[in-house]
Length: 321
Image 1 (cartoon, rainbow, N blue to C red):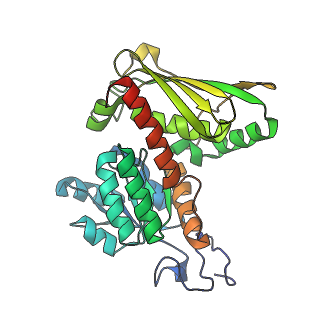
Image 2: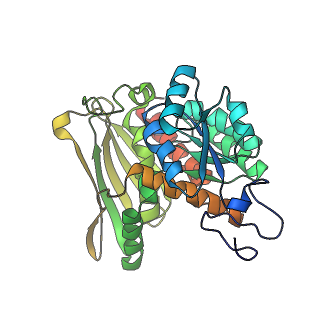
């Protein structure tokens, strides 16, 4: 592995004080991940993403044994009969389940000393998100939240460029999606149908805008047709962002875009090039690096809590909560 305190290619260090992720792991410089979830996102993104990382996918657990068996077979990994049994076999857990299911399971994992690769939003209630954050802090475990674009090189390069130019005064975003299209893998997702664009697309929007324009101190929300929502976000820097979001919009209106404006002109966010599994692999590797370094990842559960607080405030204004 090299000298003391030096990261391996897998991102895990065996410096002074012993292995940060458990006996038998550091020798190979790899962390053992478990997967919780059996839906499309678990099968097509989380599982393949971990397998594309520098670490090991040990196995999968889900609430439906038949679906769990099918995902385990598709990924070529062991299946577990319970969440507790999975925790006993791993160093970290990757969650690909609805947010209200994720939060209590992730708390149990944190209290068992397991590191967390969480989906957005981390919860649907700020108090629950805070409890999850406190459980992770209390156990000394590390976390990352999978705000997909924030783990892609194209978005990171764009954000770096924005920082060098400065004088950004605001942004416009239009994220209008038609999940009812036959080709959408999310068209039958109960939690997305229930919570709509604010809670599904909103976390991605907020995580990117916070990076681009700084912390958000206030949100004003106006309801649109269906699950449509119009947001005005006030940043601590003085910049103001506006956004229109819809998850179940007419297919003909499908559009996506985010642009910043300021003294140096207008800059548009790049289209996605990196696949979701590739981004997930980066998230897994960076979680391991945070474990090895003993540091909190900037995209960890602290940011996850901030996002949930903003979304809950908007929900109250919309009268939908």
